[in-house]
Image 1 (cartoon, rainbow, N blue to C red):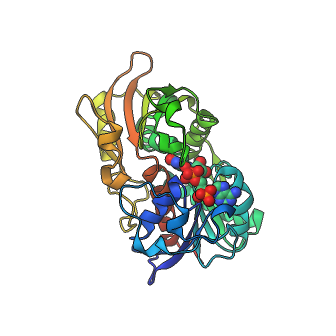
Image 2: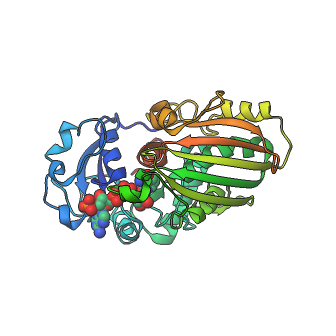
Length: 353
Ligand code: NAP
């Protein structure tokens, strides 16, 4: 494993948004990374970060970034790694330019997630898919690289599905999500639309959840990812919660299993490729709640500094085999912290030249 002997300069693209602010908050205290540049849209270029950003996190804005000047999203930033929190259509145009110019791009956007030569990674689930970077280099000839993190809801599904799939196999998955408003970015939905309400539609979300989950649980055959073939039905809803997505899951298994056995594999799950010294990797990615009314987003989203997925209400399903509820912090594990963990993995595995 490689460890940096000095801090690596990193930039945040989309630094003023919901995910960008999380990146800034987390990177200011990171043991391996140093924020050397912040970038956002034209309307904010040239402004001080403090002036450009409607900081909405409960901690105060870190002193180190207040006076930093917002730069354009162009591949001339003083950094080795760029964390992208850009809207998908902007990411599609700009992320390849950064990868081509030699940067390691760790992206939260959906723009390239399902391309055949772009790894979509949760280190505890499919670190072995990083081998796709060899294919990426051959096909695109980039000096740098592009690695993506999954959609935030997918993250809260794929982490509990992984140990269940390894132990018993998955045939069918049914997922109903209740997604926080911060998942729609900052400033997000209007209060009048979401207050006292549930919105049963999030554009493109169900397709992302279904396709990305199968990709994450897929296996590598040489330099090709073969997606898992379980049937997946997802229904996505927006609810009046600030942060933390809740997902109700029903699963049909290849091999029948006692509920206690399902609880045990979830509780005991450790990454197949466990890297104990990655600063953001929790020892156990899943925390199993035994109380009858947990997990709940307000109480459980910050488990393990927002890196643990909380799973509870594990019980028989009269329609399929087993059902449960999962809560994931959408802007931490499901976005900024997840991408930072990917960058740590890239450093540790020697992918940064
Ligand atoms: P957001 O709050 O709307 O922030 C978007 C950021 O991109 C802002 O910093 C904005 O800068 C910048 N930007 C917008 N248009 C731009 C342009 N044309 N050129 C350069 N910069 C531009 O969105 P978000 O929720 O943080 O999401 C960012 C990405 O992460 C999206 O792809 C989203 O799908 C993904 N994601 C979000 C979550 C979540 O929970 N929110 C979770 C996982 C993944 P200005 O302030 O200057 O406009």
